[in-house]
Length: 156
Length: 116
Image (tube, rainbow over all chains, first blue to last red; front, top):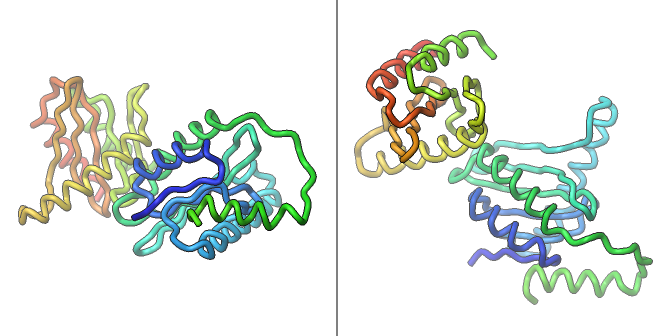
């Protein structure tokens, strides 16, 4: 059974609604540096981590091209394949910008994904709690935090 | 917008009761050209109408009825009309409830031919 899981609980309900409405097959919510916040449809941790890293890299490289062209900040990219389409978008929340990577099949369309993504971004911005004060990142905490995130995303 | 598309949409929007007409990319659900009254969310109607048309096509084919030629969705406060246009496009019309559907259908088919 396909499941939606979140490291940050406030993202769960908006993501479930977005996936149901847009008929997305895979959805991944990350920070702009590729840290996973929530996912739908992935069954293996390695796939999530790869997709998150690639999504963040695509957004970063596109942002750089956009900066060279002196255009406003990166917003969205889409790719239409034969069986699947990919939609990658950046949006603002009170905790800073986030990335959404969405994969959809023939039972959806880029129009539907874009349409419901607008509402998804608004729902997340509304549900987002106030930013926490910055804390020092310690190497000792890293592995524990990573394991906690994987447990939240895959239930193990 | 291409003047050919605009002219085709104009022939449809001249029908009394039509609140807007759009050419939509059938597979993508994205707006190709539109002539809409204020207050109609073109991108939302396009995406949802294309999705509806895709599902109706699947249902029609499954029932061995062939491809849908015309879709009329009658709602309590208006109607949604859709007809396939060339190159995988879909002509979508948002109309008042009391529209003359026969006339609208005729103009939609003419518009579809005009953008071929």
